[in-house]
Length: 187
Image 1: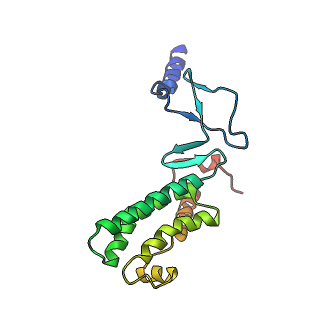
Image 2: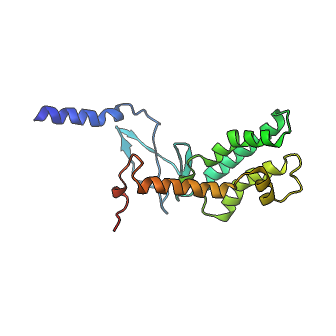
């Protein structure tokens, strides 16, 4: 009986054997962003931080994603500038396809996690597509909704809502790799 318990303990600690100093950070959520209590993992003290990046999404100790939104919007504006600078063609359908291929995935990655709740952040994300479509030849005089209709595009906020609904659908129908019963119960 002791041998199986020992093998289970080794199997459970195997991922920790790959831990290296400096790989992990400690973030405390809430009003007390700093703590005097030291935390350890595999004998190494964890360094405390106010901002952490996990799977490409940046979050701060107040559970806000404004830093993430600022980061992706900056990268998206840079990519939009490069597309306008590097593409010789000024064909709007081609530039629209370049936007959808190189910029939109950056703005939509993991959006059900970080989708902005404040209007100023929604506008900031939308500003990337608004500016890009305004600089397309023949579209500078049109207002933003008209440009989107003409280009057969949807605004980014509606696309985030669709991503949220798809995720909710998958959760309700148990199409994901986690048990929904551990998150909520139905009556």
